[in-house]
Image (cartoon, rainbow, N blue to C red; front, side):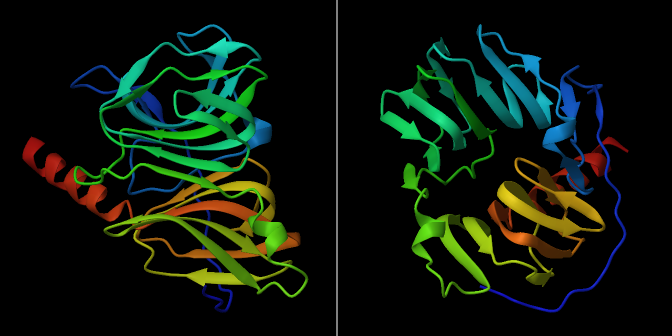
Length: 257
């Protein structure tokens, strides 16, 4: 838990959707050395190959088999065919009940399925999940299931200004739930890349308001300077995972010159 003073820095929100010249694959917010954001109220949904399953794409490199960060909406009764996640699957259930061979995962559940795991998920009553595909380190084989639904209420009336629930750590990567009390100010440098999905509440960063299901990704070069809203904020946070990725991108660009 870290509580530091507030400072300011300029905003530069952007979104890129194009085609990769090498593989003609979809690229959305594919430059990880720059910030990216998406707000729920501005969201557009696209159909998936499975009936009743729609996607809000946040970042993506590739077509149906992709390195991707997505919010996926399952209509009641929808299913997804049996499939393998060669690069691993990480997801957080935002709403509803997400079911597969491992059981029923209700809202507030965090799941990691390691590389080459497979499943055939369904949503009998509908579900909304935040999912990251093909983003595991090659030596990260951990299977994880954590129910976070009671974390905020368990803090009680004397909760600290910033509370954190660790979900997964591997190398420099850290995944956690963070709860900030109202008007808490944060100035976070040296995070190694930061990615945030708002679960409820609000935070303000660079003059922009991030509310329920808003998403922000910052490169390692940018500090996270923010203040919680009047009702506080609860967030899914990942940090430390972009430095190595950006380094590999830089090497690839140099080789192409």
